[in-house]
Length: 366
Ligand code: HEC
Image 1 (tube, protein in one colour):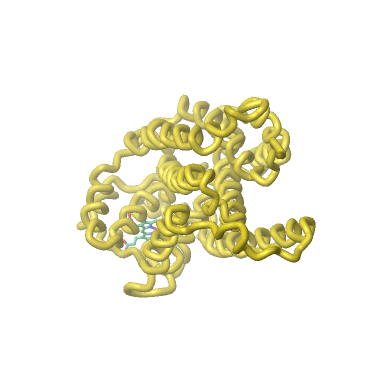
Image 2 (cartoon, protein in one colour):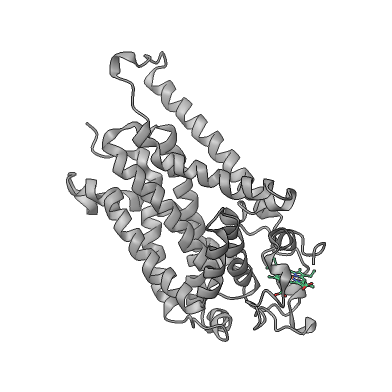
């Protein structure tokens, strides 16, 4: 039996990148100020201090993007390999699904922290989406809004969620590795090698393509800067249906359907059984052909997925918010107003569709 499975390398890549994410994250906590007045300024200051500071911050952003990307590939590969049918993999499957959720929450809390207009938007939109849930929606939404403080989001982002993810990762992979020859160190070394090219790409991207945060001297046009792929895209895709459909179709496509699909997939090992050996159809393909077929299928599914993430993200401005939300509009550039939580003063914030349209086409809907 082979001791080292290259077929799990996307999971391994995600793991190595997560370790780096932890390091860059610890670095950033030393500079970040988790309060509404200073948060944005503390992030901006990173770009004035030294190259190392801004590079660490941009690495944190790019790493996040690559982590979620490799998690998605890892997920589709496990799905197509039918890992949920293997009794021995049941625990890994479940912890893997939970990890997807936790990583999603870490991402969302991460978007909010810089507290510019984008962070603010997520802080308002996440409760809105939760509010679409049946029965628990309204109280959940109000709860999230009143619970919100930057400090709490910060604690969730740097402490609670990472802690949960470390426990899950331990059950997900480390448990098996401990019994394996070479154990965890060997696994980390091998995957570190495979991940090296990705690390180089992240390092170069972080140095050359900075995430637009600093106040620009020249105010950008509304849709400027939209081509930078950011981790936000993975979350925005759930909001896209709200842009095209009214009434129940938006939440159905953006929330219920993904939610039900997620629950079904997570529970798959518990209601699907593998057919006994003699009933299974013998595949006529040779082992090499099987590998080629698997590669083609995984690649096409991932292309469709990433393609839609890209087209959704492509339309969203990443820097353009400042072109209107700036000093000349009477609001300080980058920093949302103090009354941001008062939905009686700003009733538009309750309108999910308006919020989404304003994000994707601010020059048309405002
Ligand atoms: C074309 C100019 C323009 C652009 C670009 C723009 N906005 Fe706005 N935005 C406005 C105006 C005007 C309002 C006030 C609308 C109202 O209250 O009637 C507003 C309101 C908002 C609100 C809610 C109400 C408030 O004032 O607190 C949020 C949230 C918001 N914008 C976020 C964003 C984000 C995020 C971006 C970038 C993706 C963005 N905006 C880009 C013009 C713009």
